[in-house]
Image (tube, rainbow, N blue to C red; front, side, top):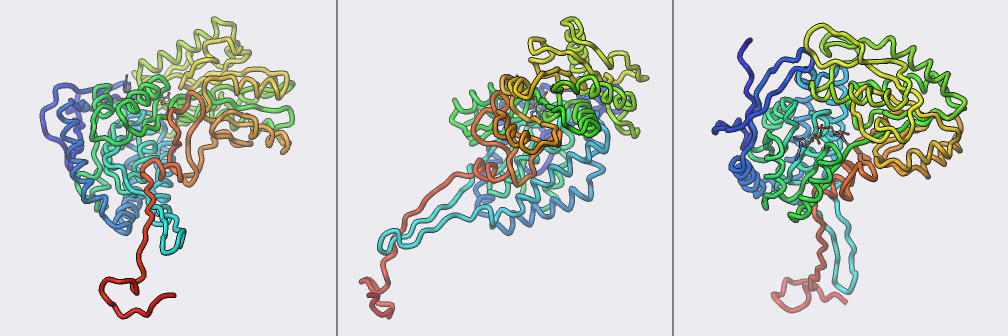
Length: 497
Ligand code: NAD
């Protein structure tokens, strides 16, 4: 075996060369091989990084809006020029196919483009003459060093939901990427430096719970933006707020797609396949529960199964449709959900457990399970893999009740040709992001991304104006300037009547 890559922390504009006692292994999920060792942060390294970010904040917060946007514009150019390289890094550590990896870079860049408009977004309000000679105006100021803790499934896009806006608003940043696929963040750190970002403004700390706890407890960290599974999101929210920090913690999901009897079933079947199995179902906006409102279930299941037969599963670099899952542990966990669904009475229409791919990659084929009931484990829990459950409902009301009763409320979609039904759904559904004949309704960067219920802890969604608010504190100034004709030094102004 060749020499393993060593992935180090990025502090103060360069790789941190200090000693590391603990490290993690990074795999190529398509081959099962360990391809790198990643250093895990200790409390001492965390303290060092926070001190660096605190020092850098003193000058970055005073950098002009022009300087900040120039860096972001340059970063955008560099990212575009290196899109294929970043996609290759993502595929090598996450497993998703290259086109998907490029897609996440593009979606992340939309937030960079949004943040390039920060001079407009930071304009405050001004009220002249609220009392005689008195004006009131509002300004928004940065928080200080902020932490971003991201999941494995979008190693480039999820950090980009936050750091462009955090930097544009004058904060300094420490990203703690997933230890499973840290290389995309490291690549972006270098590009930010190349784009002219001063050293210390953007830092990367690797690690596991120790690194996360260190950031949550450090008094120098002013806010935490977290994305990951619900139990950890809740823990991060509770621990971070207990330590006096502003926290937004985005959690897990169980996204329902409702198909009404009048829907275009070919569009619905195409959408279910793309949204259920794209990125091997490892998307927080993946469709996991398909609610077929009778009498469409039989026809829809048939159409979906026909399309699934054409999905080519393999190494994400080799032009196939679906790659492996991220780790062997996760692959086996997802397969165990299929076992549970079958044991509880679900009908396995397409069985991904039977898939064979040469080598030791963490592969599992796309799976379709019909006749899933709300009481089953596969319905209640997030699976986060290529498993699509079909629940048969008798009416719109029953379908809506299913969505609204579920503990998660990230994304949902309805398929229908009836505008009135769609309008009623958008009004009645208790979910943060809603699609109408669109299966993965990820908001554009100028809107905000976030779910309801157990899919988000805290008040702020990611990016859009909510992102600008999250990374700034409001201040209102009430000022009285006496007219120059009043006392003091005579500047020659005429008396103001
Ligand atoms: P995860 O919760 O295991 O890890 C997320 C981050 O938390 C990682 O950086 C990890 O190192 C850290 N972490 C893990 N265990 C921890 C612990 N015990 N204490 C402190 N920190 C810990 O999530 P994941 O498996 O990397 O990502 C998949 C999950 O993320 C899914 O549940 C998915 O739905 C969710 N997700 C949600 C959104 C959203 O927008 N709501 C987006 C992407 C992913």
